[in-house]
Length: 340
Image (cartoon, rainbow, N blue to C red; front, top):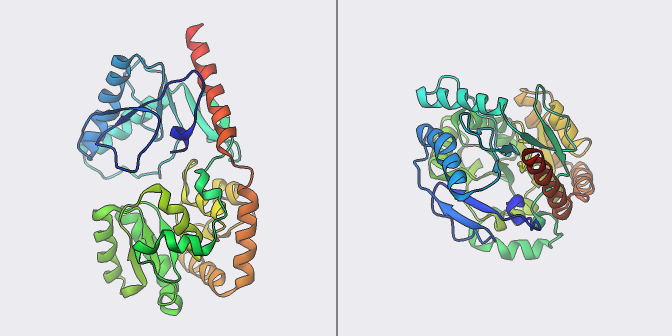
């Protein structure tokens, strides 16, 4: 959404979608819909055949992706700004394994990896372009709690809640509930865990796993919501509970920092660089300590306020104009190299 919000002089944006766009998607871009099944086989065909073919038919000079799945057998000039959670393909069906293999081949021939300049560079990368961090402008607005409550009134949100905004695969949700089980007995009724972005299948999976973990009404979920509603939900939440690694671009931790929402998560090189002293981090994989970190945020108002203020200060310099200027320069540099 940040990329599509950029107005780049002299550069026309063409948006390719695998299904009809939602009603809330109002952007200044020429949209091309080529329906495909949301399955490993459908994604493989979309990434390796449909997108390169569409780029060629439209005469587009560059293919910009937000997941690390560029076409392998294509002359397309491709760049990736990774904004998706890492997925473990091991043990999947043949189409999943094949997609992983050809995506790795495509990444080996990538013309540019776009990376936030506040994160350490990834290992063994090809051409790397550093850009200023960015979040959607609505997350940087200091809306009042009363305004946020009015905006989200139709959603029937709990009065207080902890937020989860992440992938809906079983492994991720089990990791989430394993950590949440250390919190639920003492604070789950007062601060239920509210999950965002799961889709219908993910919501059903979460409900089933919550019953398996005997977590009852301490776990709830919302349907897929327009991006414009998310900023208010973040600002009203007591904390972001994030037992996984954030993607480089567009992840929940960046959104939480910009919203002044305290974060409890695991340590990693990327996470430490992203949050610095603005989040409560614990050693990776220790679910009990992560639960204890969240409890501290919920019961110690001083800790929560300190983290919220530090997060806002860290995100204060993130701006769409700075990101857009950097993106335009990357495009021009890449196209100049191809031309000459």
